[in-house]
Length: 315
Image (cartoon, rainbow, N blue to C red; front, side, top):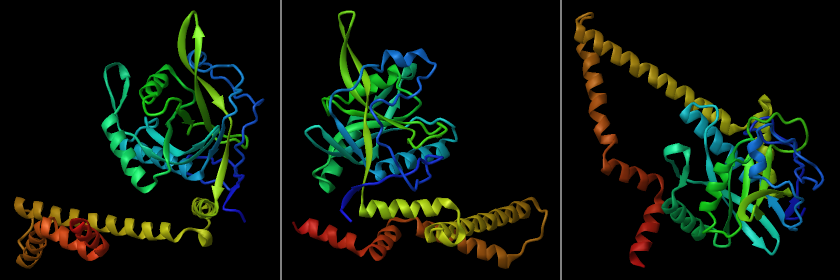
């Protein structure tokens, strides 16, 4: 089996589900249904894409975007969170390979305009270059059914880092009825309208590429999300056990807190043995949260970190 071969996976029914077969090589003649909102016509060109650009998308990028969306949705408790991230990979001529991604920090100013945190972007890009020196910034991603003028404004902010960045948009609310993923990749072009140059998006063809390691990982996630008992992931079982232990701990802490409240109100008699045990437990908390404890814990748990720090100090 070759190290880098095409993989066909069925589209997930949700952003987190990992498909078994993906076929995402969109034919040039295939047209997506146009949304009823007329704003799409102002930012997406209907012309045929003859640029010859070939985009290869790795499953890791899709999993990162799905994870980003799910975490923000659960943390903020909103149905349609706003997420923005950067796409990384390599480019050779007109062949682009998107291999990884990371989240971008941004601020929403008056009027709902999104301003990308350039300092965060620069720092994150430098950190990735240290680990993946051959990866370049290729574009960015967000969520939504179709591009809007707001996406054009964000795109313009990233032109200083790539003269022609790609734009990947995932629609997590799309009901998938075909073998195509709810993902669209766009290139940016300059179109002359009424004598003025306007930045527009134009759809680009893409296909899913995967290596052997990614194939194994996707297969593992697919079995994890399938819900089949014997084929489920051991990681899910471990996290479930941890979650149940935390819930039990939280319940017992609430019970101790309730006991102290009732004792303070005089509703129950004092049990000095219980009070001493609670006091002993509370006295241990500052020790566990102290800098010395944290340093000793990290050194004992991750000895390689201390070795690396010592080596850096010597060099």
